[in-house]
Length: 325
Image 1 (cartoon, rainbow, N blue to C red):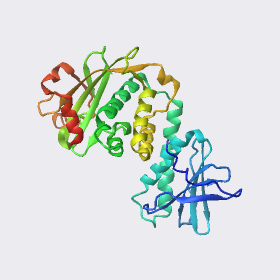
Image 2 (image 1 turned 45 degrees about the vertical axis):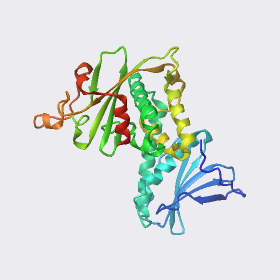
Image 3 (image 1 turned 60 degrees about the vertical axis):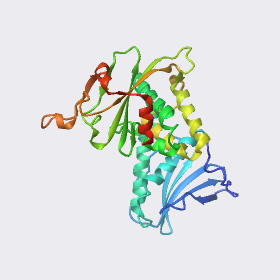
Image 4 (image 1 turned 135 degrees about the horizontal axis):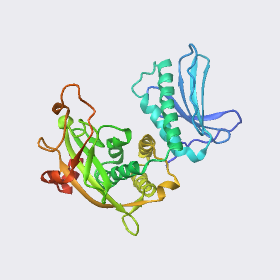
């Protein structure tokens, strides 16, 4: 893991801190620093000293404090649990991205945007800590990660590849590349071959060309290609670290959004690819779109039999060309 604080020395005196501007290109003044105990610090300093400060959320392993002094307001994050540095780094990067559109004069508004984003992370991390992903969600996540590993990361730069993965953020489709879309449906090889479509918008080509990937998984015992969910995530992380370590924050942000946290329960089962079929969504593909529904009907979920899709099947090379555009 790349530690963005590793070039910042700890403070020389108790009660003091060292500091480094986090991103000189950002309109707002975000800083990284270390205190006398060597703890990782991150703060936003704005020219505003007004009314009552918004209440700061409580985040496990991180102290959050907002203070006003000398015409400025400063919101500071202190990492108490160094084992959480990876997620802390992703959180800090996300705060900068969430405010990148703001002007340097945003003052109070920028503080409130950051606190609102911190509340989102409070919810994410609380849900991630307390809830284990269901088996069905694990299977769906493994399918998306296999497409990310085998077809997207191998053809795009890591930053572009991770930013294209929208399934982690519960978007309508799983991967979006400008006017090209990949929707991944994953199920066990032993299940009946029916594809679950979650809405009338999911296979609507109005927003771009769509490749439907039917990813099947088998029990992984003894299979060289088998990976547990933890192993698959770590494999993807290692690939990104080797090529673009600065992209790790983007990946960790996406994994936090999907509710993933490395835990022993995710090593109980391993999954091996058991076949993949690619379909091109065309006008005559068996599907429902918003234009097919009577007025007032929406949020439709339905199933498509995989056997009815054979006329739309494409080779794997076609999928790779879709990624590359």
